[in-house]
Length: 260
Image (cartoon, rainbow, N blue to C red; front, side):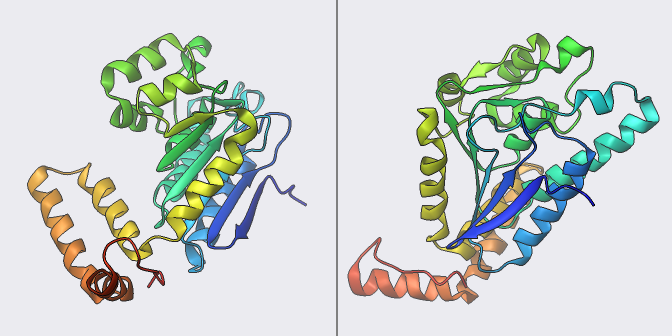
């Protein structure tokens, strides 16, 4: 029987994905499969309107399981990397906004996992980074692609080339994290932010997420067409009807959205 290393829960309209492989949630191949399954379960639950991803108070995820990887050859590691990338892509493509609560360590594969989310709330003393270069390798789960898209190539190259981690406050300074707070407040702060998103205009949020993510992969003209199509489609949603009716009747910021 396979141990449960990834738990899926729901609190109100917030879906929660929790890593559970003590002591530091090192990511092995079993976790790849469970992370992918968790993303699929969350995406299928239409009651979920935002997602929180965390690893508990001690560590978000200390990285990939080096003991499992060390003896693998090129063909075997390619299979390992492919299964991890598939799990990360499933999380990155969740239809609703996602928030990571990061305490302790988010290193290597754990950092790549954090980069799949839309927002990151970090502990002030958290360590984030890619130490792979000190092992003679590079990030293999999307790190060389997702990080520069968030912070620019120069900062990304410095982090990847040196292998030196950064603290939570620095992550905020470079636009990598939304907020840095005391470690004891990370989970509550991230949950509050996710809950705020969950009570927003869900259909519009999902459309905005898709337009931004898809638009970053294409030229401007194509991106503008993606946005135009998404904007028009929202006029078939209940949220648009409620939002505009509320604005006309009561002014801005008073609408209650159904998520449909």
